[in-house]
Image (cartoon, rainbow over all chains, first blue to last red; front, side, top):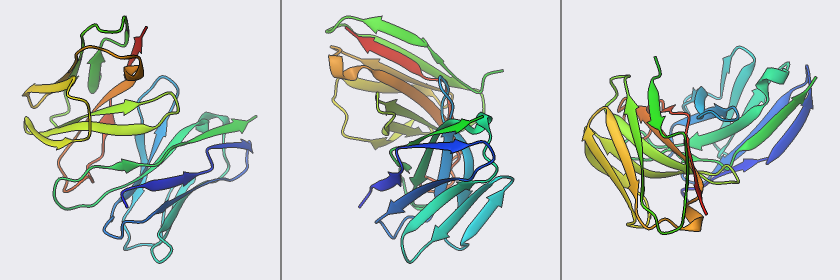
Amino acid sequence: QQQVKQSPQSLIVQKGGISIINCAYENTAFDYFPWYQQFPGKGPALLIAIRPDVSEKKEGRFTISFNKSAKQFSLHIMDSQPGDSATYFCAASMSTGFQKLVFGTGTRLLVSP
Amino acid sequence: DTAVSQTPKYLVTQMGNDKSIKCEQNLGHDTMYWYKQDSKKFLKIMFSYNNKELIINETVPNRFSPKSPDKAHLNLHINSLELGDSAVYFCASSHWAGGGTGELFFGEGSRLTVL
């Protein structure tokens, strides 16, 4: 129930294309869904986050789509660039009590020039 | 100025040894964490401290002992190192924003290799 399933494990996209990474969760008490981006040799950093009261959130070329009934959310990277090549983690948590952020298994994205 | 800094960046040691990793944050955050990232990139929380108090303690062998001398520091001591302890250990910090919703700021990681 605490798991967040992420797919695909790896993804190769051409420059200018759309990268799509999907995540699914089971715990309906989750109400906070961030995405973290990790470059090689660095720690993860928050990219964008969404709460379940909206179905979509956009920040520049990055969009989270959220489907509460399906318990799924996804990250779309429009006009993907080589500089977007990194590992992306979805995550989920609850906003009450002492809760941990549960991370997905990660997706290695490579954007080819 | 580095926000979350951890030292050392690399540790190479023999099985059975004891090692420590130090972490400091200058962001004024009240919550700090240790995460373990294995060779497959899985990120797993180990411990979390809020205002120097342990609030999350995942199923981690008791060979791992965190210590938070103050809100800005969280150290990790590992006794009797095993091959399976080889991983990258990340320190992180956040403001307490309710549950697990505070933005996490990660250090650059400490790569531990046990031979």
